[in-house]
Image (cartoon, rainbow, N blue to C red; front, side, top):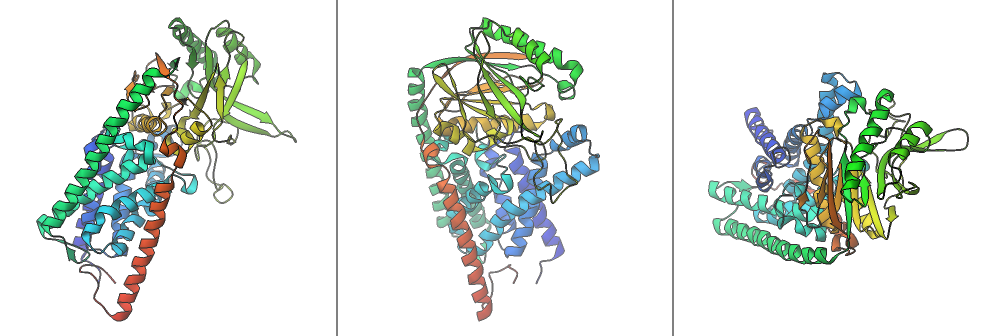
Length: 537
């Protein structure tokens, strides 16, 4: 028997409110404490639901969350993709629905069938949520944007467990906190989960267990911060400058402004060199032409940095001709030597942006195209390629790549002593997009215990130390030069070595539990046993 319409609407609104509350945990709002309670409304909405109802309500939760989180994609699609506003809104809702369908809804349905005793949510919710976040990191090219574990980046001791299990470890602890709060409310209200009540002593015990876990994590963080700070103080250092030219996206690829763009970055480079920089980093595509292939702008750039005593890392597109007259295009970063500006190495972006730098599934969806100014699809480079510079090894990530923990790990496994990310977030103005993107870099530093330098065309440019402290972050949409000495560390963290074994195991266990729960429900149906109160058969 289906629930009354008003009850379905009420619980749908409750779930939607939870989705919006989860968004509030991320920038720009940045109410990190919301990450410890935002899943509670969803749990309440599905507490007596069958798998079908839980799936639908979680879809509502997910759509509300992803639409409110990624709203800034709409003006980007309208302004730079040439889409009509209604179509852009529709695409965002479709994207949010797909994310919810694949990641949020299965979690809720799985919990509804797999968890009968409410106290089991204390371990089941972390298991399911972390497992399906891991799935989101790679399924259909992956989109690990704003995972639950990335919300509390300002809680420095709390996020240090990222060196053990990446963002998924932090997610698990936060999910346990959500489960504990839910159980306390369930007990206080005298309500049921899947037909079973939870006693007050049991709810309090679960809350104490979750609190003990959080305290342990905090204590581990304090110890690791002290240890990494000691190693950082003893490490060799490299003086790095990051440049922020603040070139408007509407002008960036206009040939009439090409010379002015080059001159802006040359001028900022001279400022950086006056501050004794050993490495000067230009943002993604700061050189808006095919470097080395287009001779006049290349000559202008090289003449501008001639006789420099610093190395340069310059973002620029590149191409390589193939037999038959076709070409492979790359989103690249060139490492140049001092003085003669000889190319020491090139990093090609390995994980490309779908519908931004290439069109996935275009043989099935020929009406979809890219939204960036470029001749054709980019070609991905090899993952984990590092660049050697004056006795140290650099790990480069371009823009979107920084959201993927596996790419940072691959760089560190290949010897990277310093992480550098170059990006262009001019597409998103002063919306939440650049802030959300920047926040992800903090965890990459903690996971790998590497200092990280970030050069962004319009910001945020910054330095992040190996425990996640943000240093010298620039404001958006201003010219800026930031210079800092960064430590070069070689320690391999547990997460860098073991990778995603823990979240992969969580995903596997979650799927098995869900299948076992469905099997149990079928057996009960055959035997004519009544379902849990409130569920639908």
